[in-house]
Image: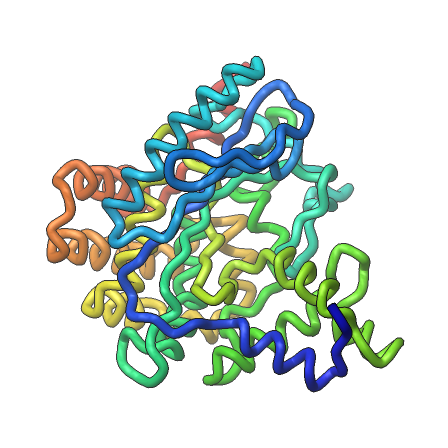
Length: 364
């Protein structure tokens, strides 16, 4: 496919970062933890999306872009049911409740998942992580709450708040790790602010400097050999897993797997806070100051909503999300699910990981 100089590689990345579009379409990807481990089953087409294997214990169900959150939820529900049937056919059990232990490997001080790097990428088989990703339209070129620059900035200030609210991976071998989200602990050194007011430039700078699976960044490869193969650059971009990614659309990868149907709350809250103009404005006001907070990703992963700054932002954001869902006329069932999560966790300064920690502490 040819190779690129450094300038051409930067133009390649920037050109593919965003396809401007009016917000409204929603895509959802849900990781499913299964037991026992299994061999690669290959990619399977489902009714709406597809099923793929990310690691021996994680199946990934990816739904198509759908017009509105409720259509996206219905399609994902169909595909999750089909995926469970496929798993059953192969003698696998899809875990509806997050297990009380995770397979993350921490360093001697319990400070870092050794299978994941601070740039957000994961290295199988050293870690088993499962999460929920939400894909949204990039937004429109230009200003306003639905403009790409504002959506890009909001996604970054909102991301640690959602990560704290949906933290749910606190244990290893049934013992607390010191983190409420081992998955997000790998991102503890990330800054909140995306850098600059140009989303394409910010994404290009990140992507070119991020270390890939081979241990080198595109920038380093270009420094060493002068050119980079297009195929290698495409693989590098596909493998990047930051909290907020540019994949033509916006992808937010900030939530741990949730028990039961909790993935629905993740998708609903994330999408409405970016796609509803009033909710987006309120979320921006609630989180703008977080760009100046120190060690926020570390605090989100370790302390979650026991951190008073994150807790205050989360309360404002979830209130804005509920109001936005009501304005959009979504079902009472979905609004009630968001309200129940808000009451059970957000208003009490808790997250799902705290339930697991309570159980772990209660066991003899």
